[in-house]
Amino acid sequence: MPREHVARLFVQQAGECARLGSSLYAALLERAASDVVEGGPCADAVAGYEQSGVEEALPLRLLGGVHSLVLTGRAPELAAYYPSAGGAFTPADGDAVWCAFRSVVAEERGWLREWLRRPPQTNEVGRASLLLAGLLYTVPTAQRPVRLFELGSSAGLNLRAEQFRYTAGDFAWGPADSLVRLTDTWEGCVPDWLRTGADRHQALRIVERRGCDPTPIDPLSTDGALALRSYVWPDQRERTERLEGALRIAAKVPATVEAAGAADFLAEVELEPGTVTVLWHSVMRQYVPAEEWARVEREMARLAAAATDDAGFAYLAFEPRDVAGQPGFWLSVRVGAGPERLLASAMPHGLPARWPDGGA
Image 1 (cartoon, rainbow, N blue to C red):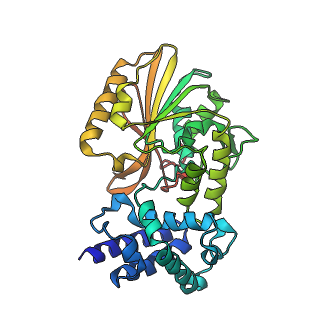
Image 2: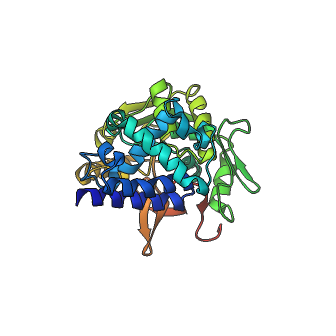
Image 3: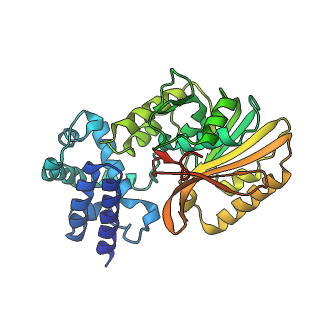
């Protein structure tokens, strides 16, 4: 039955939220799943989306819409339980927060149905830790100019990755006064390849920053910033703080994000002498249709084949994949037409990363 399918999506996402440290969203989604089956306000709000697949993230769309109402002062009773709005939540508050949440959905279901049209875009800043590590690994010489391109950029926050501060134990890289501080970026030893790359590059010289997204977000606009804040889980303060810092950096460091599909965007990219062209993406592959991704791979092969010592090309990806039969999220790199190398795994939000060989 359609409602049962939607309820399963909610239950599945509840489990993911619990696993990734959001007890608030886990509690809400478990109850929302029952509300969908029973034909309550949540069922009305998502009516017409009963055939949604996991990749469409329907539960997160609904949660993001409600969070936006909280952040804009339109749901004061619910805000009392949302840390992002100054509230507090404990597991003992489960029934109370659900009552407030359900009332908001019932009162704002028309507005929420409009919100559901927009795809969830967190532009997760924590993933920059993996991407930046891969960049330090792949750029061959200090101060080599880097042209940085990103697929599925959302608001383009991670196109400013070298502006962030990264620390793990005695390891540190990036501006000491950065507004974005990614701490405890590695679990266990920091790998030798990263230390070597960090020693080689005391700083990175990014001379071009461009990305694409089917529905890009302007992080400097009021609506764009609200959308980004709304999709950060409200009881994860560190993610909220990282986003706020990244928004302030975005106001100072320009980057361009085009409204375009990945394949069409790449078709316009050419290598340039005296630079390294770096292409990266993170947790976006699942949203690209197979036919389009085949075109993306052809364009990447074109760029890799054209690479020379003077006009370099590197490809970095942080995406879910099975390795040795185990699912996870992995950073992979490929320099020019060379072989792919898996550098590290991490949680979906990027922190902390793990080096499978213990830092060798």
